[in-house]
Amino acid sequence: MLRIAEALLARSPQPLRAFVLKHRELLKFAVVGGTTFLVDNAVFYGLKLTFLEPKPVTAKIIAVLVATIVSYVLNREWSFRTRGGRERRHEAALFFLVSAIGLVLSSAPLWISRYVFGLDTPAVSLLTQEIADFMSAQVIGTLIAMVFRFWALRRWVFPDEQARPHPGHLRLAPEPDPTHEAA
Image (spheres, rainbow, N blue to C red):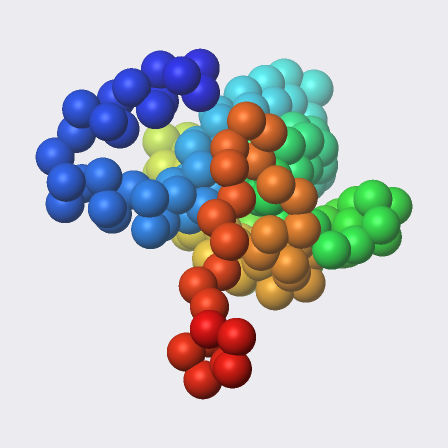
């Protein structure tokens, strides 16, 4: 997969290549986010439309927990694979703390939609309820949590940019300081 990505990148126009290389961490985070968005939706609707039908917030919380576990593995091993700086247990604990805050942020719009605005049956049609649930939980909540999590993961969970070198990639030596005598 890495070779395919590198081949595509080598054949892409220079401006696109420069953009991708500059923002590769964010782009990888977005791919992981898209993957976990699909996991979240599958679990959320699988639960919400079956035995947790009367408890959509509970279904959402379970879905986010499952997606969070997938997210940790993919972010640690791919998005932020060169970052680190913490012992694995400490890193995992911080990741799940940040994700717990993300869980609250992603569930809050659904809670507000259902329990503050009353957008559930019989007050509104089933179609209106489902659209409101999707927009509040899967769009608004996910976007709010995503922005927070990207910032928090880089800041606290994976703070050191070059803690772990890319396997198979050379690490360039820093340029010499021109003010240093040996330079």
